[in-house]
Image (tube, rainbow, N blue to C red; front, side, top):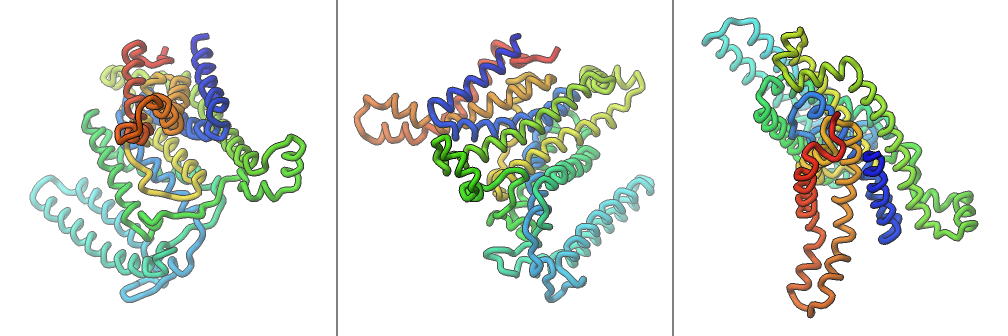
Length: 440
């Protein structure tokens, strides 16, 4: 009953937001809250199930968003098929892919060489030669192709484009992108101690963000990739406003077509994201109560004892790390599809790493329902300050005379979200150290 009351309380917050501010604001926050809940479930898999402290969540989100560009972005034949001086293959796009394959082959050769040769000076020299030679070979193939792609209409294109497929296809591909990166990171970093794992994942996430920002041939870098299609079955507002059946429905109920179309789109987003959340939490509840889930909690609580019982701790850590990152990557794809554009500047650790961690901690790590509650509650708290903050500041400063102090207090009201979240986290840690819905 306590858990039910907590969810009802969060529902009341969204209801009051609709009544006191607007239903458009309430539904907008709910859409982000549902996405945040799915992301928190992915992080809870890593931390709550296995005790893996990863601070590279933003990297997985960004890779999921990048998948939408490659899958759903409009094709750019002139960019992908560009040719120029030094381009070895018929099309620059294929040459870029060939260069990336060459880089992977060099890394694989270096790994195999490291394992095949005995330790000593000869192995170090051979490894150095392979890596340096492979680097220059990679750049010789990669750089001319990138220059040819980015030379085509850089103001509006300058990239290889996408496949033009529906956004729904991009969501599982985003999960695959993040899972592949998690496999590579996990093979290297999961053998490290917890604090080193956190540092390594944070650094790798920053490398991913920097690459997306600087490599224009991928997704136009900081110039942003726009005009990404919405996922089915979400319509565009202008199409609804031109639909005779929708206009007739609005006239029957006395609704403004513009306002009603905006609300309708947000309601559909909420239904789609809620369906995905429901399927995911059903799967996770079955998993966590299965023998596999009990094994993961045993590994989390005592790795030495679990290893003594014959469990492959490192392999299980890698599996759960990949699965959690895949869920996070899928939410990144969902988020970018909803926005209709990829904006690399939006992917910052505060929003897509530490805020998600607050959701997991406040809700209750190790408990799927706690992560959902934390996502909905903290997501609401994070966004409501943007909307209600200026109103509250205006009411508080109503008795003050006009001047720079009053203006400053009103202007900085939206930034009070950090203080609000900090207070919320401290209160929960003081009175409910294991979260609002702790793990049993």
